[in-house]
Length: 239
Ligand SMILES: O=c1ccn([C@@H]2O[C@H](COP(=O)(O)O)[C@@H](O)[C@H]2O)c(=O)[nH]1
Image (cartoon, rainbow, N blue to C red; front, side, top):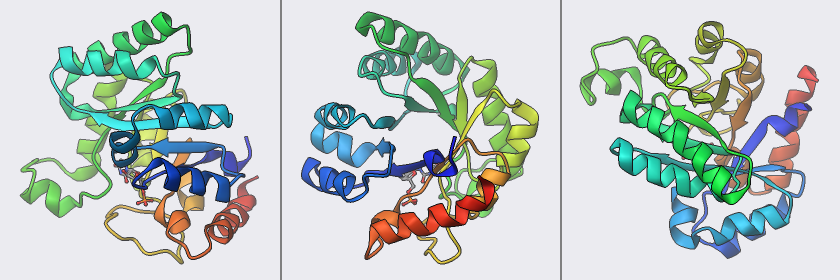
């Protein structure tokens, strides 16, 4: 797979018109992420629109609830035939196991391929200091992220979302078949914004990420096409 096929661009925009405008501005992008803002605004019709353009879809709704409720949400989401779907690892192992079964059921009901179900280990906007002082987690951050990934793996999930700073450790421990998706990726020339644990695209792929989620460095650029091209050129060293 070409390195540029490993970039997922989030459609963090308020409505369908803005989403389609971005998709049309970046025809080279094959994998788009639909998250909380856009899905809450448009509902599933944005998924239909992306599918009609043969795009791959990461539905990043980050489910977090009791097992019965996340199972219902995962069953419904799987019926859309999306490629990737998220749940928070902190929902716990019972919820993760219920979600794993539910995506299979939903996909079978709709006659589509089940999505890869991946667990958020620790949001990339959380620093080590916030983990300790806001969330009161008494573990070192890398140890905490790894323990969430291992719980997800033991619960039957396909992979995890982690920061690029933890990806090499997760890759080493969870093995090559475990999908690792990294947001919080920043080229040297981009603003970090609210991301606290970032690395560059080249560093993140070298460290073992399967996919990179890169949003504002591309989508908030004055010329998104040029930002995309610049990142692809940087990644060409890995081809
Ligand atoms: O831990 C996480 C999980 C998900 N995200 C999502 O990724 C993108 C990142 O966008 P940028 O503009 O590149 O910061 C965004 O949609 C988040 O919801 C994350 O950042 N961290």
